[in-house]
Image (cartoon, rainbow over all chains, first blue to last red):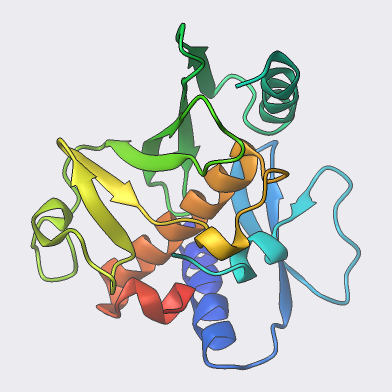
Length: 60
Length: 143
């Protein structure tokens, strides 16, 4: 399941780079210390931090 | 780093990477942050972020210190192909991979070390996907 999660995040990043509107919100979960995807139409989890802006700021 | 800023950095890191980071400062005001991070899928890594005394005016530098050897999809050591734009790697320092993170034009003194760690974590997710797909990291993170 965890491997699937990594692949799903990878697919989402690929699609974003190809100009496809993101379907998920990328969150960091401090309880598990991991990145997670959450459907955009679902409310963010209370303890999770959205990190979409950090991802979309670009890489040098 | 100024004491007030150091306190902010520690507070944020304690909320987000509790028990997984080590932050130290030398007499010159340069700091070192080591953070243990996990990528969904089980990959465990240790990042090293270094800051100059004028941080946060200057950007920190980010290195991967554990594991020491990372290979690409073709089996080549990433250190041997650094610097690499396709893999978002800068010129290495010693034996450590030097990771790209913020573009200088997107850097702002309000950006904390926590955000740089998240940026590196996203790089690691892209790297683990690269290992499966063979696609360059720029396909995941942009050029």
